[in-house]
Length: 482
Ligand code: ADP
Image: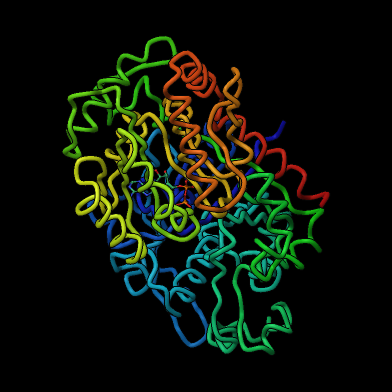
């Protein structure tokens, strides 16, 4: 079959700029599409934090006009690690010169609307006629609108369709309604949600949902959940109206997450020989300053943004009960909301200094060591579009303890204590349910044959990107008929 021409545009791409799963997904998808022979144009900002990289030259002298504002931009290129695909990084110091990815203010609207326009400009400068422009989350969700109006005159885009992937509906890019004019989109006012303009706001994500040829989200269950009011965050009606054009494609696991080859681990292992995992456990305990005297004591690990989404409100009435009662270790790596950070600081410094550790910050090597060196992985999310860590932990022989929601429901099979399952799963969002589930997990850990079975089944699962990328290609090919 003919290879496709795909323009991917996103605010984050691993390893250059990452705040969450979005960056991993975009990088892995681009790499696999390129490897499969498709022509890929991957466009992202060149953030201030990327100053240390070596770049090649791309088109220069680009002017990005947004209403009254004009931004000078140039394209710099750098290979995507693990691939010879050249990433197009938009250099525009007035927009992306700072260290942060997001500032959480109106400036972000200009920055990412400019990025979205820059993707079209890259295509034009390079004569790249995309079959698909694949945009991601609110940041680049204006792409369908730009295609429909601002770039509609250009025959280059005559055959172009758009796919908007929603990685997390919680972030919608809402701004005051007058921003439409200030972005220079006054003539396109009719394409925004009229009721919401009247209410005084505009939402980038909503606009993308209205105009993209098709929509996808990162698991089948989440695709269903966001059509209901509980998780739809005000967009459920619109998503229901577009249900025939909304698809769920689960994320995959990239090549750097493999316990046989992981460069961050002191010892390697696989499903036939877990001895290296024990070494990782020792190294993890040493690294965080916990005793290595008895390696049989179970370690529960966790790596996460500290936000309500991740289920941390269930912890204060469950985990301390267990830490009090059991020989158990708990290691958390993450950062986020102050109230969670101070709680976990208290838990590890004051309440259980010999049993719990809270490592505040972002630390890629430590995140790998926690996946490998823990016995169980905690992920009690309130909602979870897909989630990556529960897949990593299954592959690393570290059964995840998860709530049955979104991608967690789709990727973890519940252990029943009778030779089935790959993780420990609960339904009700309550501390009581989490406590009972952690107790069950520890009970299973205490039955070596049963636990080993859970580990093995998890380690044998296939979460590879090849299959996922092929699902995206199928969807890209269907776009013209949608
Ligand atoms: P989300 O995108 O909602 O944060 P995901 O599970 O989809 O959640 O992806 C999170 C990714 O970010 C994973 O690769 C995870 O290991 C990584 N991550 C999150 N917090 C940290 C941290 N503090 N240090 C290192 N990696 C982290």
